[in-house]
Image (cartoon, rainbow, N blue to C red):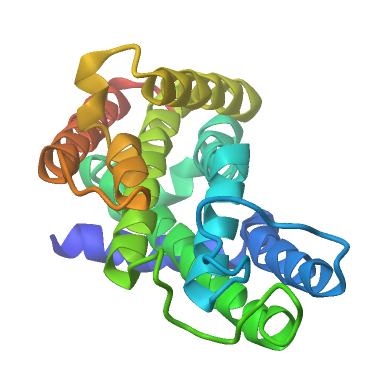
Length: 260
């Protein structure tokens, strides 16, 4: 555990210093622009989150923009891209050797890198959510689209937070997949394969094509958005188990591979 903690702290510093990590700020910037656009009438938001009078409370707005960004796949693209560049890039360039020389053991490196990436991306999720709330009160609340209220009759705060948590868990699974692919492939190819896999699974979940996928994190998120709580415990457990299995497999391959 001490080795994992040591590598984790080192990876957090490296991740924050890398310029490509700045792309995780894009959603927070975009949501502020969207807030301003909504307040001027240049952008119209529609959907189930709208209150009965056609105006948005803060929770309505945050839920709407979260659904919008997740449906477009913006978060999936950014998280997988950062993972591919920062891990596969180190493997391809040989920079991973520096970590190996300092640590000696390969086993903890994969887990520590994954946790460091999770921490960074979780911070981006929090920043986006806070930016959406700030954008609402700065621009939307006093416009014709907002009612200035925080609470909503349509959106429950715990359910909304749980929905965001399951979106994060769903994307974390594909970050783990990207780590596995990044052992053998270039950053671009690992990014493309992981992203295609993400969109394919999202499609199967949305269309209910496979019954087992109702236990996925994204399916649980969709149910929570609709005000339902069915299957969220199996979804949580199954996602954690799959992530653990992928990380274990990645660690085993990493121990046996030659680093150029």
